[in-house]
Image 1: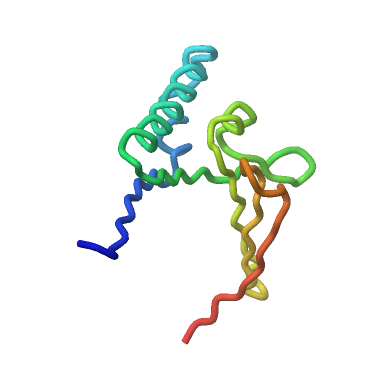
Image 2 (image 1 turned 45 degrees about the vertical axis):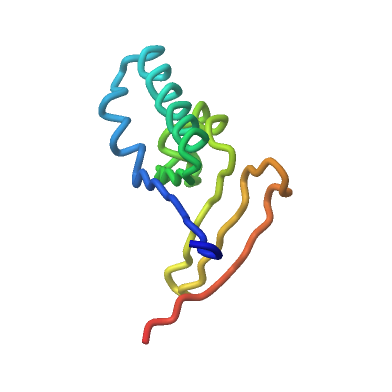
Length: 116
């Protein structure tokens, strides 16, 4: 119908939890599998005009910091990377742009979720 918008969204939740057991200690083979899966998701997005949202959890790193579970090699795969975080004490959340083709990196939005 005229005037209606159609949104197509494919969500792959916790991609790292699915792919890491497959990667195991397979070295280059595991890396190639992860990269080709990411490129396949990009192809699906383009060919079917669908937004693909992939979540990747954070793991502990040296010095008490955190890093993405899929590591450095995954950073080049997505077109846009966002970091979502929440301060549990204040319940303040933030979304930071880590990578975007036309936006400045490190842009941040803070918001609070109130329970009723």
